[in-house]
Length: 255
Image 1 (spheres, rainbow, N blue to C red):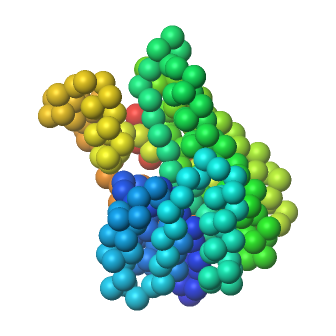
Image 2: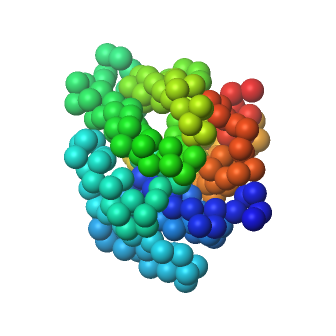
Image 3: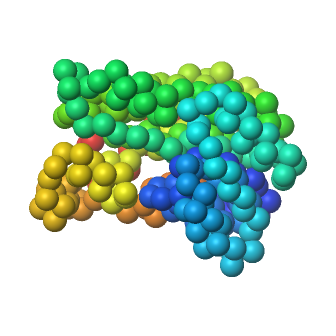
C-alpha cells in the first residue's frame, strides 16, 4: 500500500461542512478513507455527502453539537458500529471571537472553550480505546495563534494554545500504544471563518482580504485544500514516526 493512502481506514472529521473540514473530507475520500462527518447543519452535511458519493467511498453525516459529551460519545460509537473500526479522528470544528480580554464576554469565552478545547478532549477520550485497536491517529486543528499571540483574539489564542499542549500531552501518554497524535497549526486560511471574522469586525470584505494576504510573508492566505493535504499526511503511514508535533502551515507567518 502507498504510505500516503488511507485505503481501508475509517476517519471521523468534525466541522466537516465547510472550510478546512470539508476540504479534509474530500482529501481523505480521494485517498480511500471511509468517513463519518459531523456538523450542525443537516442540509450542508447532505451536500458534502452528495459531493463525495462519486468517489465510491462510504460516508455518513451525523448532525449534532460537539460541545456535549453525549454527542461526542454518540458519534464515535456510530463510527465504530457502522464501520467496525476507527482509524483517524480529526478534531477540526472551531469558533473565533475577535475581542481583547476586556471585550470578551463570559458567553464568548465559554463557547470558545467548549468548542475548541473541551470537544477535542471529549472526542479524543471517546475515540482512544478504538484507536488503540487500530494503532490509529488523531490530528487536531490548532492555529499558528496557538504558537504565538494574536491581536484581539484572547479566547481563541488561549484555546488553540491549549489544543497544542493537549496534543503533546496525549502524544506522550499514547505513544506506547502506537497511537500518533499531532496538531496542524494553520495561519489565516480562506474559509467561511475568515468571512465571519471580517463581518464581526465590521470591515470591508475586499480591503480586509487584501490586508490578510499582505500580512503573510508568502503574500496570500492559505487554501483549505493545502491544509487538508497536511492533515492527510499526518494521518497516513508516511508520518509513522511523527507524534507530538505542532506543525505550522501559515505561509511563513510564524517563522
